[in-house]
Amino acid sequence: MKAVVYRGTGGPEVLQLVERDLPAVAPGEVRVRVVVSGVNPTDWRSRSGQSSGLRFAEQVPHQDGAGVVDAVGDDVRDFSPGQRVWLWDVASESPAGTAQEFVSVPAHHVVPLPDNASFDVGASLGIPALTAHRTLTTSARGPYRLGPGTMTGRTVLVQGGAGAVGHAAIQLAAWSDATVLATVSSPEKAELARKAGAHHVIDYRTEDVAARVSQLSPAGAHHIVEVDLGSNLATDLAVLAHGGNINVYSYGNGDHLPIPSREMLVKNVQLDFTFTYTTDAESKANALADVHAAAADGALEVGTEHGLPIHRYGLDRVAKAHRAVAGGVLGKVLVDVAPA
Image (cartoon, helix red, strand yellow):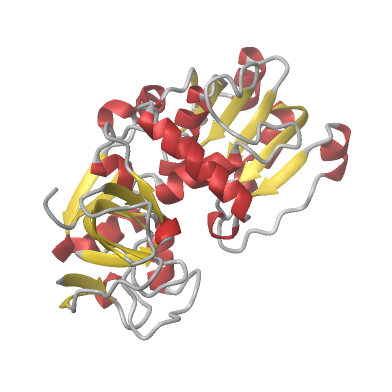
């Protein structure tokens, strides 16, 4: 079978397309024929050595994917050959990611793909949607689960609404009946955020975000999904509701921020951070269940018409796919691994 591997960290040129043996299926595992592999910033950061060193002699990249069950371990009862599934955190503790034609993974990293959901949707769920779910469910005031009605009466501000996590956060918050505000940096991105389901979109390059949020939600934002705390902290504190929650899911290298203690104290601010790989087991299980339900409801669609353009590459062009993600391409990068 064909697989993409790297044997040392570095630029996209370290990625190689090779032939490998079909992976065995151990007890507790499911072997999946990968149809689509999803590429996230975490993938190129790991490959480059920016976020972690190489822990295995040979690494197949990519955490996310979707495909068809090919075989199951003797003790696996929840899956059967031919079943459509999506995969999450595949390469986080393993040398075998989804950039290969077949992958064997522990059964708990496999989720049934709803009949109405495409393989593109399945390959786009893992890192972005699970991260987005956690950013919306860490507030001490709840909600701890998402679904229709769970965020009624809440205002959510998504800082950076055109990225993959921001896109998923908009979709999940709208699905849960929140009023969703999103910030963007261009008219093109504004249109994508609206298609994702944002009720109000603010171009931070041409508008005063704090003034606009205050106009749209005089009580403030109850939840802020934050992509760049260093740039946005002052604005976040200005628009956050009393007792509100800011959840940060990304960083810039070298970020060291002074904490404006007085401003945070008087508002009883809750400041949280989300790193999806180390989310506790109960919260991850809740996220998997809710994301599955949202996908089944058609609430996590992808594609330009849903606010997340798709950029497609073949397995022989994974290096170009990594360059696209590292370069900040607008939309979702997917790798077509095998025919559906």
